[in-house]
Image (cartoon, rainbow, N blue to C red):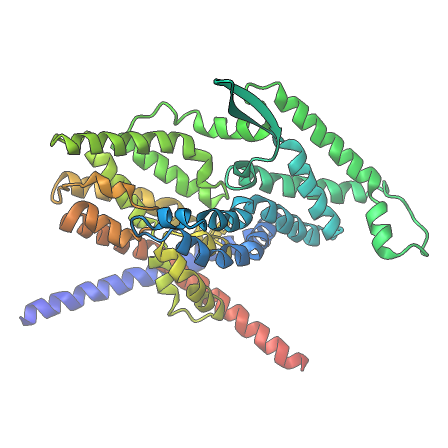
Length: 455
């Protein structure tokens, strides 16, 4: 017994020593690089822009959870009593057009750093984005027993939400930079001092804005000659093209899910890859359900198990839970606001509120944790923890907590794999969280001391 405790203490000491060395590396190597990158105007504006949109993602979390509560028949009941349409409207009014909010706040943040008119840059960037995206939707209706196509003037929510987020970020940065550059070239009207400032600021940049909108016209016309027809579809097709030919296999799931995590770090929403991911996931689910009903071997057992393990590694509740013991007030408050949404797989509050997107400090855990867990899940499921999967659990609502879904779908072995992925996630994130928290705490103390001195 004494030998066992001695061995256990030695393991704990080695683990603590390893964590201390890792934190030292982060402090000495990564932290200075992250601080240098954060001082960059573009990265600083991106971080500020995302943080300023976090009230929207936090404010919508409660309604999203209630509207998609993971109870069988709940959404059908809300539809029956006429509430589901209103839930969707509120959700679409927040996350469905999130790109518009990001463009505005990002352009404001970047314009402030470039010392140009913030409101003008933001509103022009917003207009530029609307100008270059598709403004018609083709619908089909029945007339005299025949299907007839009709073109409707409308903006598609997909382009205003996830699919347009990356293009919106580029537009905000490029248009704001161009606005600042042209404004510095004396292309503005010089109105008399007697003109009210609000009117002067609105009218003086008319030449600058005209040049910017001519560029929008050129972009729109140019992309109309491509097979995609517009810049949004062109971007989506470029991202999707290498993945569309993939079949549901362990390595394809790891590649796609890993790519999702990497792209999400750079602000490219998962919706961009909904094509190949949707095809592959639907193939797996329907193929497994059909085989399960006929008492046959599941054709996509291993890919489905790996998909679940990688989803478990992306469960941000583990990350947020560690933030409750943070020193900084920012991390503690963010943990309180983001924890409950994270239980129901709503990650936008923490992604935008920290932010994790475009934050150099969190690049390693965000981009590589799921890939590591994908290979670990593959190895465990193929050797010591074989899974008997119930594919019908894949039909549960997307807000079903992963710690409920995985045990129901695969029993004890799947629950063990889930816990292993949780542990890997914690170990990957904790050192970076600790260093970032210490940095935030020091900033808060410095601000408090500066405030006391001023008083």
